[in-house]
Image 1 (cartoon, helix red, strand yellow):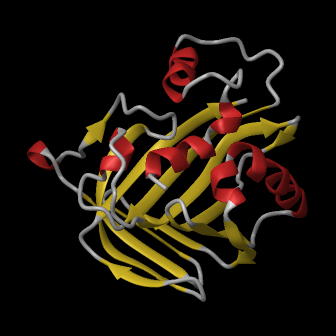
Image 2 (cartoon, rainbow, N blue to C red):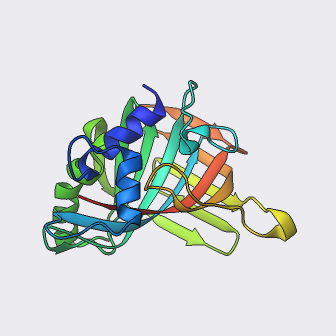
Length: 217
C-alpha cells in the first residue's frame, strides 16, 4: 500500500462529508469553515523519522514505492473529543507504512486521558489504529533543544537534528498537501531504531521532520 493511500486512511474521519478530499478539507480549514456541530478537533505537534531519504517524497504527495519504517511522536496541544479535553495526550506510533503499527502510550497520562484516547484513536487516527498490532502504556522520554529532538520508548528510539538552510536557519516548508504538515521543518535522523516481535531496524541520515497537525471532524 502506498503511503499516500495509508495517510488518506488516517484522515478519512476528518472530512465534513464522505466525499471531501484531503485538499478540499485543507481548503475548507483555511477558509475558516464553520466549527458548529464538530464532534472533535485538535492541534498537535508531530515529530517523525522514517527510512526515506531527505526529503521524504510521501509528505509532498509523491508516495514512495520503497519500504517505509517510521516512528511518529504525537503530542496534542489542545482540542476536544465530544467535550473531553485532549490537551497533553501523548503517544508514539511505530509503523511499517501500510502494513502495521505499534502504538506506545505515555504512561504518565491520567485515567481520563487514557479513556479519551481510546475513543479518539479509531476516529482521528483511524489508519494507524486499524492496523495496530499492539497498544501499550510505556515510559516515554522526550528531550528538545533549538536544534535537536530526541524521544524514546522501550521498543523505539529517535534522535534527530535540524537540517540547516541558508545562514544556518531552519528549512521551513509551507503549503504541503496534507493537514498533518503545517509549519513543516526539515530534520535529519541521527538515531532511528526499533526492536520488537514485528521488526528490527536501525537508520541514520534519513528523513526527519516536525510539523503541526490541525484537524477536526
